[in-house]
Image 1 (cartoon, rainbow, N blue to C red):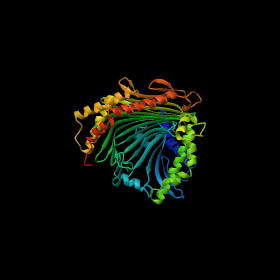
Image 2 (image 1 turned 135 degrees about the vertical axis):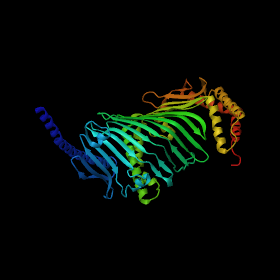
Image 3 (image 1 turned 120 degrees about the horizontal axis):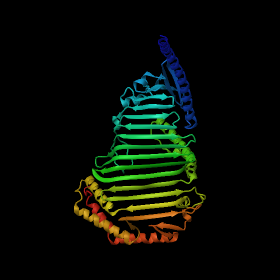
Image 4 (image 1 turned 120 degrees about the vertical axis):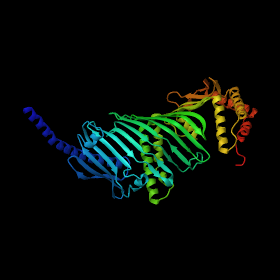
Length: 522
């Protein structure tokens, strides 16, 4: 009997204690929200150097639930309601339990956008009662776990359709160890093409799946890694369509407070132009030991210029010349750009590889820089040489790849011009032209033959404390020469290469071949 009374007493005590605990959670949440808003406003003022502010108002206070309104205060001091936040107090919020979160948490939250004059356009283009929804639980481990849902956007007059987006996250408040997963449904859009080089009347973007991991350790060392898969990109106009299928991207950024490293890769399994398969490609690039402080200062300056420009353009309701916004800060931008070299950065482009069913060709460039000690120069070329410590250039051309690539490009041209497609005779002519180019390259020794490929490579490494203009030895096509000799050899062999190409009448034969697929009526 005593045991039964004891158990019953405990149950009653828990029932009484839970509202008290929940109310305490609510008070703690309000204090945290107040601190978060203050920190946000401090960041806007100090880092972004803007006068806009955020504030909040508690619209409902209960034992189990609280409601808050987040407000935006513009530069004129006008407060505009922006977000509605519902918070269910822990440790066991009912809404969290419904979604399968059975562990005790600090609170569960749902944030939605308020429909007013400021946000009306968002509701219009999404045609949704809730265009943006954020739901998450905040645990005792200081991590928020949930998602951001963004409704599809459709602006018919701009031919813009953005697919629904879901961003799942498991993130710490200070982002010291956070994970994000972004899923975006297919989209289509059009944008103004001022260059005329790439047709852009229609653009389609396949489903995107992206993951990002953000780490910041106790020493302030930053690491951000992302990887994404995109089903396809398609863009073009009525005459030309370009499609890139199954694209994989990776990016990595690290920052130890002194040097900033950025690296990226991209691989596409198939590139089609007018339904002609041009093969695949891969790109590898990196920027290493960029001065961290200079990059951040440059970023803040560019942001401030852009912010002021767009504010002025919106106020005047027209596109403005950017020159007045840049002029007053050109010196500042220049000094920040020079400061990027403080840590002797390294740039890596490639290998960039193009591959088709016949073979592959690639290009690579690696450059190591130093901060120039002497800026008393007479030409831009001299500045470049005085800031360069290492140069490694490599171009690998596979003749079989070039033959297939040329045939494919002429096929694309024929389709665009509505001309007959290349025949076996045209392919034989392509092969003869490229064979003669190959012979000219080898006979002139301008290129080196290596593993059935044509190789052109130049490498120079300056001694410690010196720059490229002070080197004594340079490697050209895997042979080491003095600087004076390599300049003469490059000039002599280059002229011989051109001479042999002229003797074999390469240029006129190529022009005649291309003319076969150009529509004379246009």
